Length: 129
Image (cartoon, rainbow, N blue to C red; front, side):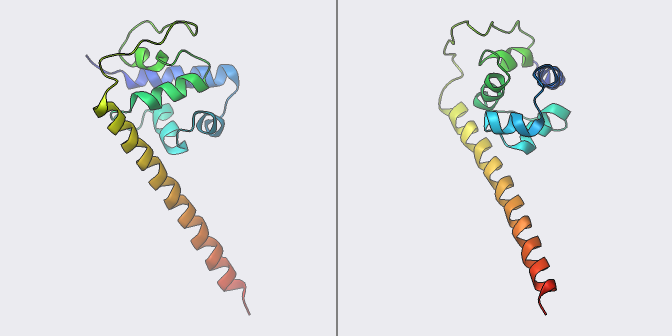
């Protein structure tokens, strides 16, 4: 089954525009890192994403949790009120992938915080008499 990440990017971009949501707002609402939201919207990095990442983004955009997964695989997305069915792919490997994605997000956030702290310290050192 082939994955169509460009269709996911298009769907996210169109819906975010439709509801007037910025990348930052989408990141905050979905609790998906801004870096990953950017990668998906720009379709710059095509790699396996956890089901939970796509579900969080779908929900933040007001869709059914499986909407973006359906788009990814070229299926008709479910309506927002449709029931959420467990799938065979909702086991330990997918949960581990979700943990790995979250660790990546946290690592990126820590690197950004570290860079900000370094900038502030550098600025304070230069301003000291």
